[in-house]
Length: 147
Image 1: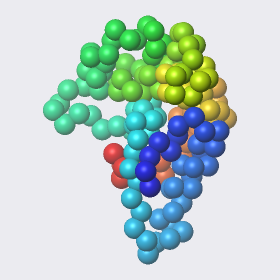
Image 2: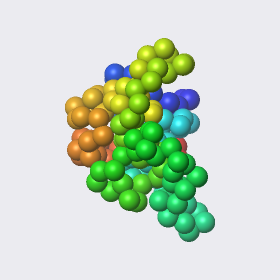
Image 3: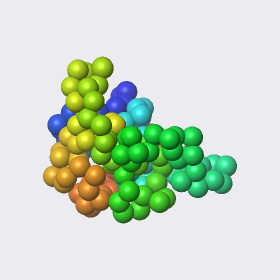
Image 4: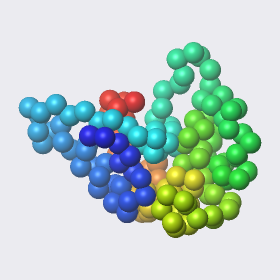
């Protein structure tokens, strides 16, 4: 399955739950999940990304992109100080709601248009409560396999 499983759609939770359920429902099949950039950012927000193999901190991923932090409105809530840059971008609230060239609509929450993903889990955009709404055990296994 080719990723961006959580890219602007209102049923992200159902998509993730469906993918998680496949190995149990079809144990004789091989399931390969390829993560997209939205999935990487989602996992980064949830704290599911492993630390970099070079021994650096996840926080070090901010360095190259810090000039965009204010404009993109990066997440600054719970656990942000040990979060991959893409997780901060995912959970943030973009400051300037300009039209997206690709879709012709205004951004919906963050630079990743992540509001619908948060809402599919029944929590407000950027809420750390989202972390409690997800079946972490299942999602962690799924994310480990794809990341």
